[in-house]
Every structure is written in structure tokens, then in C-alpha cells.
Image (cartoon, rainbow, N blue to C red; front, side):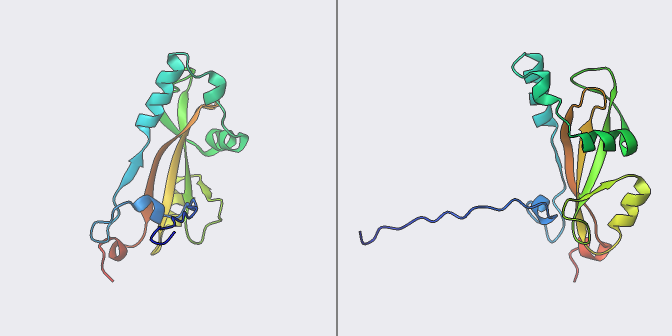
Length: 154
């Protein structure tokens, strides 16, 4: 079978490092943030059409619920599933000098303290309803780093 090429597939490893969020780099600057509203709205539409049950969507982990209740930030948005309470926003940071499982950020002061330095951190914001356990990833973006690192200078 001369001339026949063998294709080799390599398993991709999922990473939560900040580089995975960067996308295309523009002269060393970060590309921006990822907003998951379209995916969220599609799930909510499927729920309202009866194609997804409340059990399919309202499955927040107990630790996520605890974080939402104790340190989550209030939002102005009603829960799209139960419409009884406002969703709460919980932020997690991943990156160098942080535990592999990330850190749940409890205040803006803590966020500022953790983002000081030269490395960028990946931030994930999850919306959670403490009433019905709805949860969905709302945004992902990079944060932190020095102005020198952001401008692309060495």
C-alpha cells in the first residue's frame, strides 16, 4: 500500500488556562470576551416549548448554589425558568498561582487583589437561580495582567 497516507488523530486535552479564551490575537492583545446568551436563550426556548424539562435545566451543584447564595452578586434579571427570583452571578478565576479547580471570587476587592500581577487569568461568570437551581455559563473572559503585557510590549 505504497503512497497511502495514514491519518493520526491526537486527542485534544481540555484546558481552563487563559490562553484557551484568547482566540485570535491582535498584536498581542486579547480578543475580548465570550458571551453565552445565544446558547442560554436556545435552552430557555426549548424549555418553554416543552422539549426540555425543568429537571434537565435546574441541576446546579450544591456548592454552586451555596456560592450563589453566600457570595453571588445580585443581578437585575429574573430567572428564565421559575421567574420567581432574580438570578445571582458567581465568578470563578483560573490561572497561574490559583488552585487547579479555580477560585470562587467573593467580592470586587478580592477580584482586584487576585488580578494584580503580570499573568492573565480566565474568568467564568455563571448565572444561578437559588430558588429552582437553574444555572448557565453567562460569560468567559480574561482579566488581569499588567498594562505592559496588554500593549504587547516586552
